[in-house]
Length: 483
Figure 1 (cartoon, rainbow, N blue to C red):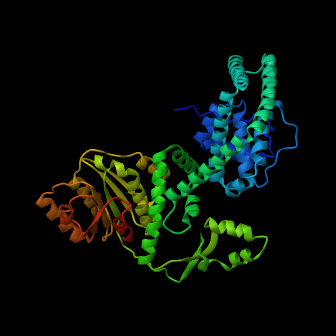
Figure 2: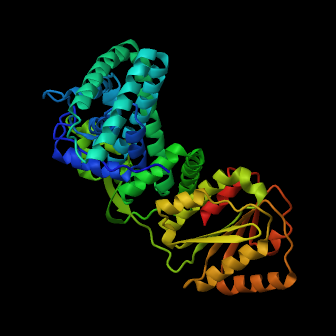
Figure 3: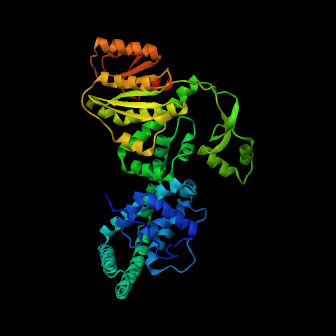
């Protein structure tokens, strides 16, 4: 666990861009929400890495970022060199179309650009002994200065050391300018990779938090506090498992959308305005913006992102439906399908959210863990917790089915849908089966069982339908998305 250092701003000109009070305040808020930015400011190779991160953020977020015409302090000359290189890159304008005025994209991008810049610096330092020695000397002087400040409680008496540090930073700026010129291609490649990873992380975030409606990713993101978006994005970026779960969730939600669409025909009644990219439902004003040369590009950008205004159409709601319950086998043999199963779970959860039904996830092996999500809504912290949970062990059907019965008994409504997934086999007592099937008839709930690669004899005794599948990406498993 690293120490989270609060942001500091040394003076009004601690930036090499045309940043204003709003920019500095907003970056301070983003910085204090982001563990990734705070860690970078501590681990960064440059003497003034924290303000460099602020300038990277401003260059990605601001409407018209420019290098300041004011005199640049000596200790920021290094930052100026990097910002000149970043902003003069041929691809920078393309990057900004993706991040401009977008809080989460610019925040993710700042972390990624900061990481790649730092990695590039480390690589150059290892190649150039002179550069390495110079940067080590600066770090040593900074540590010495910090110790003296802590001891004296102020900068009094540190004038000589500060002068030496400023001179060393000025020398470093000159050397880094030369290094950037000589290795500009490798730096450009690093920045391009940073943007690719930024886009991938944003797409994964939309896959995790978005619903089953087309173009709902950005709209759903706006409902999540920016602090939670940043926290989840950083988990995705640093955790391969989270990335895989997001990929599967995105795929399964697309399939779920098609399954639901084929089952429920949309009503033609207009009931409001929403965001999306269904051409047939666009508002007349949006079509007008498309036909105007000045606003056409902005319209196309918003249309691609699913952010154009369109009429909302709602069919008749089926009221009184009970919860969707997923009993998911997490015995040891299911570990190989863990990320698939959690993407599948999130897709089912998005159906519950759309149908405004409670969702209950029962993880089972020889023990159970039960998670309840009101109307299918899941917080980012719950999502991280779910991704990191795996029970292991053997298989006990009765435990999970008994847990499902308790949830159904507590529900105000009948007509629950229970999806039971297993790759194992277990014996159930006749007395348990009789009691379970009696309650199933009384509460009018259905059981769909997805059985992975084994005998279906036991599950047939308590299921309304049994589907044999190879894994969660098998066409048979998509039957669950029709509930």
